[in-house]
Amino acid sequence: MPSGTKKRHNPRQRSSTTRYQADLQSKSDKKDRGDQKSDKPEKPDGPVIYPMNYARAMSRLYAFTIDLGLLMMIIYTVAPRAGGAIFNDESVAPNLVFLLGYFIVPTIIWGRTPGKWVAGIVVVDSDGRIPGPATIPREMIGKLVSFLAAGIGILWLIWDPQRQGWHDKIAGTYVVENPYSGGPQFMKDFFKTGAKKEAEESETDVAEEEDSELSEDRESTAESESK
Image (cartoon, rainbow, N blue to C red; front, side, top):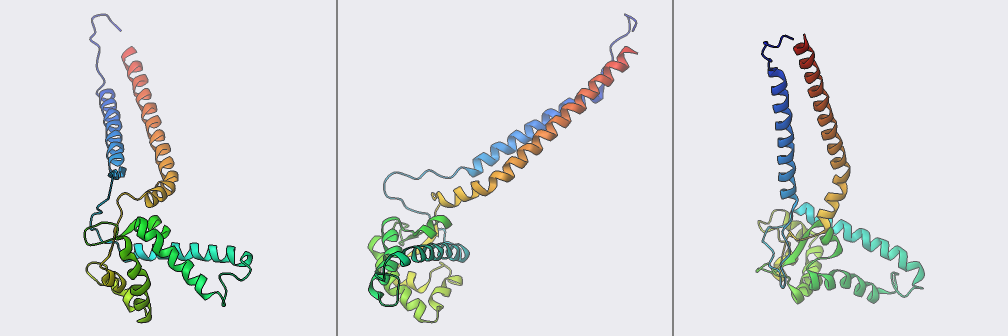
């Protein structure tokens, strides 16, 4: 190439580089937004006041299904080893004590059974606090009335504006979403692990492809300039 000839700039090279940098910036912004959305609020010290975001019927059904499954596992594990002391037709009183204890004790202390913990919901009073002893009439009297009425008291929460069943109305309690729960977030993270890995691999492939195209553009530019 003659010394007096001016070096020509390849607009394709500049455009490709700018596009590649813009793509990287866009991916970085999306990742930052995703991290911000995934951050859950920190649970405050001391008594917690939960926001009154009423739990959906499907969340409550999910929680009940988890509790029922756990109860079945406990019964079929303990019954053969209990020697008839519990979980049989003659041990009515121990059976009732166990079942009521399973639902009442954790709800008094934490406002949720293991199933509600997994579902990310919690039982609260009208102020958004754990109801404590108010759980006892809810579980012993309210649910009995709800089931004896052909289950209408349970189904009532489907169309009730505050998602209350009869047992909630009797005890003055509500079931709300728990923004501080570790259960559902743990499950979401668990099931998203595979998808996240695939997304990262896809982003890596795209970046490598962009690098390859950029390298080819540079080689093409160098060849054209040498001519």
